[in-house]
Amino acid sequence: MDNVIVTGASRGIGLAIARKLASSGYDVTAVARRTSDELEAAIAAGKGQAAGALRFAALDLAQIEAMPEFVRQARRDRGPIYGLVNNAGIGTEGLLATMPNSQIEALLRLNNLSPIVLTKYVVRGMMAEGRGRVVNLSSIIASTGYNALSVYGASKAAMIGFTKSLAREVGRLGITVNAIAPGFIDTEMTRGLDDAQRKRIADRSALRRLAEAGDIADMAAFLIGETGRNITGAVMTVDAGSTA
Amino acid sequence: MTTRSIIISQIQQVAAEQKKTLAPLTDDLSLLDSGLDSLCFAILVARLEDAIGVDPFTASAEVKFPNTIGELIAFYEHVAA
Ligand SMILES: NC(=O)c1ccc[n+]([C@@H]2O[C@H](COP(=O)([O-])OP(=O)(O)OC[C@H]3O[C@@H](n4cnc5c(N)ncnc54)[C@H](OP(=O)(O)O)[C@@H]3O)[C@@H](O)[C@H]2O)c1
Image 1 (tube, rainbow over the protein chains, first blue to last red):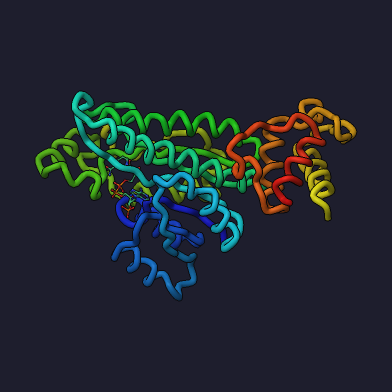
Image 2: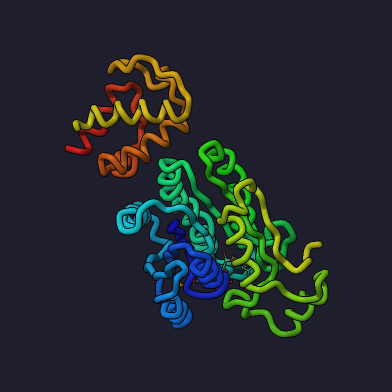
C-alpha cells in the first residue's frame, strides 16, 4: 500500500486527514511532537481492519536538522513515500505592531521553513520513483485577510506560492503539488473564537454553516487518490462558501 | 559495484528515462555539457542516495555542486569513504 506522511496529525484537521487516508487504504504515518488520545484511539480502531494502516511518529518540525534522517528512516522502514500532507501549523494571533519578533519567527519557521525543507527531502524520493503527491495546507486567510492574523496570513499565502512553483518543477516527473485553503474549521487552533464570532462567520458563508475537518480530509483524499491525477498547482477552497 | 560504476549507470538510466542524449562520459566532461538538465541532476542525487547510502549535498555544510563528471564521482567517493 502507498505510504503517506501527514504532519500535525495528532488532532484537528491533520487527524481527520490521517484517518480518512488510512480508511481509504493508505499506509499513514501521523507526525506530531506527541501523540494524543484521539490519535491512539484511531490507531487502535484501525488495527485488524482490511483497510490501510495508521501509525504515529514523533518529530518536532521546528527541528529542521532532524529532517533528513527522519525521512531516510521512514523510507528505510516503510519504503518509498507516495504522499506528503504538510498540515502542521500554528495560528498565533497578534497585532503586528506588538507581536514579539521571536513569535513572528517561530510562526514562519513552523508554517513555512518546516514544510518546505520536509518537502525537499520527501520529494527527492518521489523524483527517484517518478510518482508522488504533495498537499499543502493554506487558508482562505491567505487571500481574504483577517484582523490580527497578518503573520499567519503571510505564512499561508507563502504556501500557495510554494505550491505553484514546485508543481511546475516536478510535474514532468508525475508528481502533483496542490494546496487546500480551508475556511474556519472548529479545532484547537480556532478555539479562541467565541460562539458569537463563529455564528457570524457561519451566517456570512453562502451555505450558512462552517466547513468541517472531515471536508478537508475528503479533499485531501481526492487530491492524493487517482482522482487527483490531473490536478496540480491548484488551490482548492473548502469553506462552505465563506469567500463565495 | 564501485561508486564510479554506480554513478555512471545511474546517469545513463536517468538520461534514458528523461529522454536526454548523453555526451560521452569522460572525467573532464562538464556537467553542463553532459546532456542532463537540473531536474535530471536532482533525480540523480535522489537515486544515488538510495544506491550509495549518502547524500553529500546534505552531509556537507558547503554545497558547491561539482563541475565535471570526474569531480562528481570524486565528491561521492570522498563521502562514501
Ligand atoms: N482550523 C482552521 O480553521 C484552519 C483554517 C485554515 C487553515 N488551517 C490550517 O490547517 C492546518 C491544521 O490546523 P488545525 O486547526 O487542525 O490545528 P491544530 O488543531 O492546532 O493542530 C495542529 C497540529 O500540528 C501539530 N504541531 C504543532 N506544532 C508542531 C511541531 N512543532 N512539530 C510537529 N507537529 C506540530 C500539533 O501536534 P503537537 O502539538 O502534538 O506537536 C497538531 O497535531 C494548519 O496548517 C492550519 O494553518 C486551519
